[in-house]
Each structure stands twice: as C-alpha cells, then as structure tokens.
Figure 1 (cartoon, helix red, strand yellow):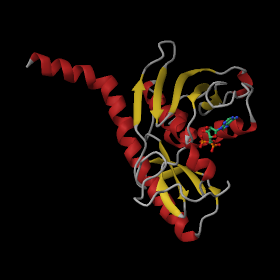
Figure 2 (cartoon, protein in one colour):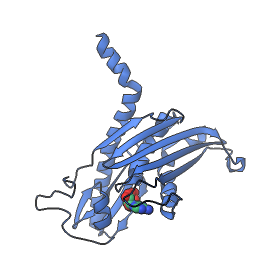
Figure 3 (tube, protein in one colour):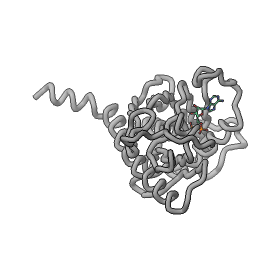
Length: 247
Ligand code: ADP
C-alpha cells in the first residue's frame, strides 16, 4: 500500500467530500431474488453487491455433512465488469481468501447446531467494486441470512476504518484503499459486542490501531441500524403503511 499525501484537504474533507467520521451512503434492499431462500442487494458508496442465500438444504457431496451441525459455505465473486479493467471471471486467490473470512465472520451469528446434516450456501456477487467490498458483502449476507429465516443470535455488521494522510478515518473508499496508509476491515455483532473479523493492510502504531478499531466498531453500529431498517421495511413496512391508511 503506497502512501501518497493530500487525500484530505485543508477543510478536513476527503476525496469524496466526506469528513473523517462519515460513512458513504448505504442502501439495502431485502428479498430481491425470488428463487433464493433469502437475498439482499446493497449499495455501499459505489459498491453494488447482490447476495443470495440457499438453505438449510441437503449437503452435496454427502460426505461433507456434519452429524451435529449445519455447514456454511460462502462464495465471494467479483463479476468481470465490476472493476475499471476487466476482471478475470475465474476465482482469484483474493476471492478464495475473502470467501473464507466471510464464512468465519458470519458463522458466530448463526445457530448452526439447529440444522444438523444440512448446508447453507451464501453467494456474494460484486457487480461494482469501490473498496470495502468484503465489509459490504458481509453486511448484505447477514441481512440475506435473516431473510432466509435462519436462526441467528445476532446480525453481523461490517465496516472498515483506516489511515489516510496520517489521520484515522471511517469507511475507506477505493482511492483511499489504494493510496492511503492502512485499511482495517472489521465485522462486529452489536448485541453480543463481539468482533468476528479483523484484518489490517498497512502499518499502524498501537495507539492508531486502537483508534481505528474503535472507529470501525462505531461504523458497524451505524451499518447495523441500516441493516435493521431494511429488514423491518421488508417484513413490517407494508403492514405499517396499511395501518396508517386504515386510520
Ligand atoms: P475490499 O474491496 O474488501 O477493500 P481489497 O482491499 O482487496 O478488498 O480490494 C480493494 C479494491 O481493489 C476492490 O474493491 C476493487 O475495486 C479493486 N480490485 C480488487 N481486485 C481487482 C481486480 N482483479 N481487478 C481490478 N480491481 C480489483
């Protein structure tokens, strides 16, 4: 991660006009894929990601089934048109890694022991990437899992923080990711107050590390509110509107 100065101007504004503690605009739509058991579409800044969840369902191949719990399989994939240069559609080392960390970030929120010998498949398809796509993917996957009716003990929210021009900032965008000093993606369960993903690309002092983690957790709490609203809108939105109309 090469470090270039002047990504924050004299007024403290970043390349996309945000302040240090501001998130990009986030929109989540729930249940957008009819054929899936649960689904979500997230716009996290310029990231556009679709998540489809299938399951709990029978495991194929059968020998992968576990007698006492369900297995969770995640596939993170970037479409060839998701970046400025055409991305090779074959799974890259980076996509295999992100699929693995996504599974590890989501598993603690799921009551997998409720579905022995079954599998849950989570497909995360990045249509447009703008930095922070793993966090956006985790946030959308968590909502899609809830939409699929999977038993969960919490929602997993996710957001990155990082260092730009030696300043700690929330929700790193693509330019800041490539030209800034550090990127720390964090996934967090707000009710259980547990971090389920913590990665760091770049170098931070111990003090900066703590500041960055605190800021990322604050960001996760904001993302959680948007995830909750999206689910409420799908399941109670129309009902609320109907009640209002009948009054
Ligand atoms: P994240 O999106 O979670 O921040 P990375 O830090 O690994 O993950 O990637 C940052 C950004 O780099 C992506 O959002 C994407 O815009 C870009 N990128 C990643 N892989 C490719 C690729 N194969 N071709 C072009 N751009 C890519």
